[in-house]
Image 1 (cartoon, rainbow, N blue to C red):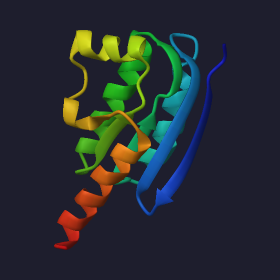
Image 2 (image 1 turned 135 degrees about the vertical axis):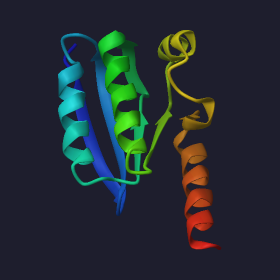
Image 3 (image 1 turned 180 degrees about the horizontal axis):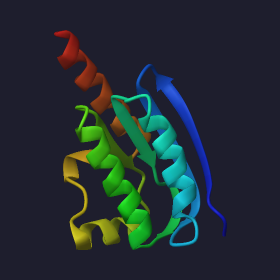
Length: 123
């Protein structure tokens, strides 16, 4: 199944990227190109909603790790949410993401982002 990727800027500097399909050797470059475009603007947060990813290979994992590293260089954050059980298992096996950056739902992510923003503004 080809990979479809949509992205939206939820607020200035905060992007939601939603890939759909299989994230593998044949499709990873589609997500990588979208991420690279967004990274040019040095976003504060990229949220990667993986609800519609049914398979991920090492190349897909590489895009996620590369994104995380690029964001950290500019004090940005990558958060991942809605991992399917089989995809979550891949990340757990290779210990690719800190658990505080993986969210079970959009609601859980929104609460985290709200706390983060309040912390930055001193509220």
